[in-house]
Length: 256
Image (cartoon, rainbow, N blue to C red; front, side):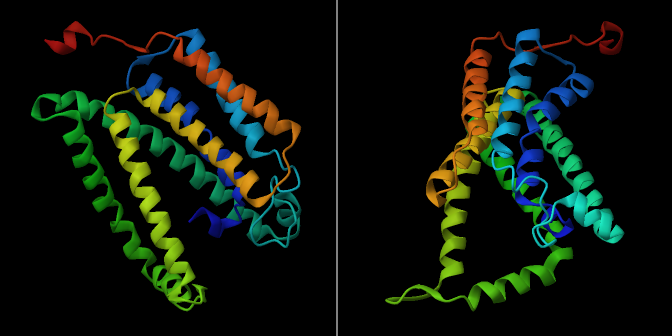
């Protein structure tokens, strides 16, 4: 959805890389989590590394998806409506990051609340099913866009001459199979580890996908990518050596 508001892929990747900080802020403010100074330093180092890895190709940084290759600032100065769309897209990304961080902490709370009703694997499967069924509801308002995309995919040329199946459908099926394996792993991971640990793991996975895309599509490897690699994997190693986060005890008066 954000791509429809002049948000480029690098900017989208940049904001998605900030989910670690969002998890820390929400955990501290709403879920009584307390982190050590070493953990906070590791979070900052990892986030900076992801930031550098996201903007390694400076020519694409702050570019719009529909402004002819111009930067977001250049497009905004010549088109106030475009700037407003871009601003709304940025606000949408911020909201999504906060919502994603809240979801991670809520899942951890529900795991603790219902741990006696089944194994963590069973709870992970139940949460996976429920969250995806509920997520179908917003697509009711995007049904016309879904149909338009489906028509384009159906009319796409075949990937192989000997296989008369539209190429976009094959890509769609392959993507969904990969997503199935990935999301099942994420939910099982969230059943056994803290939200911050899960978010750091996902951040490393995202950076690994950036590396794969560079190698696969032949994009240049810059100094920023090298610095990002050291920062991310160094921060993750240091985080693995830190003690677990603690939770403030509830007020005894509230318990009574």
